[in-house]
Every structure is written in C-alpha cells, then in structure tokens.
Length: 235
Image (cartoon, rainbow, N blue to C red; front, side, top):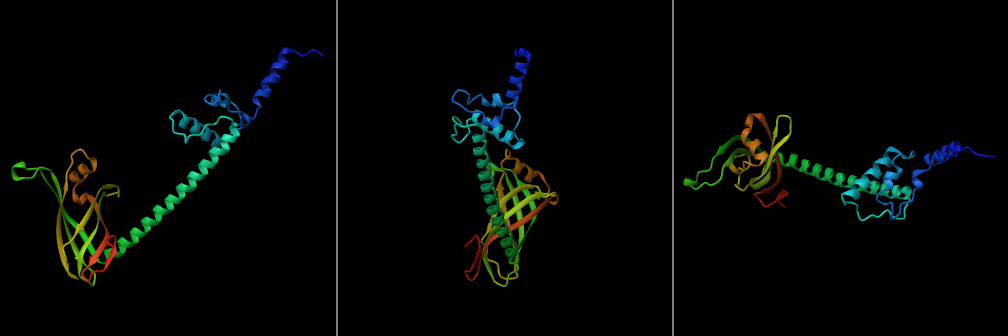
C-alpha cells in the first residue's frame, strides 16, 4: 500500500499538536528557549501558564532563587513552581495574621489609654525660617490640649498624631511625647513643631491643608503614672 505524502504530513502535524507539553524535556540547550517551543501547545491551565510566564520573567531579570530547570520536564518545573507558590502564600498568610494581631493589640491598647488621656489638636500654624532671629528652618507648629481623665496623676505619656483628609486617607503622622506631669482631672496644653521640608509631599499637604479640612487621630501608646506604674509602650 502506498501512502500519500499529504496524508503522512497531516498525521505528523496531528501528533505534534497533541503532544503533552508537560512532558517536554528541558535541557542545557533549550533551557532559555523552551517557552518558545511550548507556547502554542495546548494542555496548560491558566494558573500553569501564569506560573511559567512568571518563572521566565524572573529568569530574564535574574531574580530566580538559583533555580536551573535543566534536566526537568515542564511538568516537573510546574510542580516545583506550584509548591513555591503555596509556600509563599502560607508565609504571606502567616505574616498577615501577625500584622493583624499586632494591629488589634495596638488598637485595644490605644482605646484603653484614651480613657486615661484625651488629646485634641486645636491649632496648626507655620513659622518661616528667620536666620536673623536664629531660626534656620521653616516649621509647622501644632498646638494640643489634653485632659487627664484617669483617677491617678500622670507623669508622662506618648503616642502618635495621625492627620488624614476627610475621607480618612493619611496625610501625615508624627510621634508625640509629653513629659509634663498632670494631676488627675486636670487639663494641659502643649506646643510642638515639625521641621518643614518643602520637598516632602506629606509636609506640603500638612502645611497647605486647613485643620478644619482634616481629621486628627490621637493614638496613645504609653502612659507613666505618678505612682510609677506604666501601661503600654513606655514599659
């Protein structure tokens, strides 16, 4: 029986198209080009294609973790990439849980400390530098009023002031420490200054936004009471 050449060619093409790309061997010769060989083959899931593309991109920019695919099949490589992705997700989930736990503890502590010390910002200003007067830096000034709502005298306290726009987007956050003793039930005032840098966007926003157009979040972190006991970050 004589086979027609056209039929033979069609059979070869069909065999080539039906080849499982997972079985393609990666060698020293094709390790940089195997993606080109398999790009038109069918049989990959969307996730598998994404993993292979990501692997190839990392190889191009030199950010693979020393992995050489030589000697593996594409299926072997995919198994490795899937495991790495699963490990990264597990570690990412663990880090997120730790961050969430830390934030929850900070939020609980801040809420508890607000019962001891209540603070508000009532004025924001700006003082330009005045070399003749000995001031060489522009300053953003902040005036605060606070109340010791606890039953004990307070020796010092610390925390953060977070300025946000009216939608809650952060503009600027600064640390604050006040070490002026204040008796139980008494009020106090504090004036602070932030050295202004005109090239920092958050400084620009803080200077140019009116206090009435911002929300100020007082996030207390620690209190030292007059009797020597401490709560929070001051411990």
